[in-house]
Length: 282
Image (tube, rainbow, N blue to C red):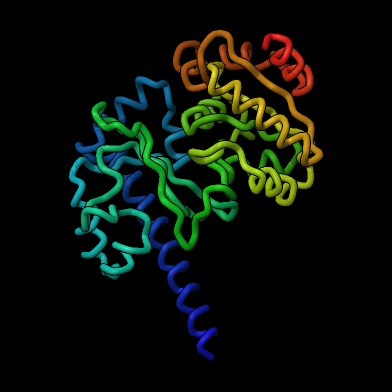
């Protein structure tokens, strides 16, 4: 009986968090699109050539500058204070009631069912040491098992219309989708993991290979190398795409539009050929 009660409490917490994150995602999106507070964030997206269709597709939002606003807002909506402080993954554990996300462009992370399970926030102040802050793990979110953009890419990958394109960051996923490459996804603030690779195979029977699209810098090349070995060891093929006109997909879309992405993405080489070239250079 006690185990059943504990299990029920866990399920209750999960259901509350699913509800909380979905509602909050809509609130952040509304603030971005309709409030004076969101004006700078709207301009930022415009400058980066992100379309209104992508803002809506990915439910992009804005978290206001006031770091204390969110706690008061949610408390007034009836959410339990202890749950907010300890279990929500939204607030600092060192400074009571202080939101992890303030003056940030918000990227909701959704599971395969479309439920918002976490956030990634991009700093807009220009002074934060952390350009991105990602939700900590909670009862509904384990970062090593999920992807950014998975729900948005789900139908394309499921149909076999296009194989998954693994990008480095959130903006790259948005840029690739805007350019028509709607199978783009990204790992969540960490390197591509064994669990993520296993889940791709388990969730999508038509996945036979993974296309890798990391930044063309030293760090990006290291991640590409690791991902090739991991994907191949799980019985999937790999193809590597390296942009030449810009450092990443987001910058490419911003500077050259869809035609630039089409042109630069079309060049590819097998993971094996990429590794041979890399090791010969070394």
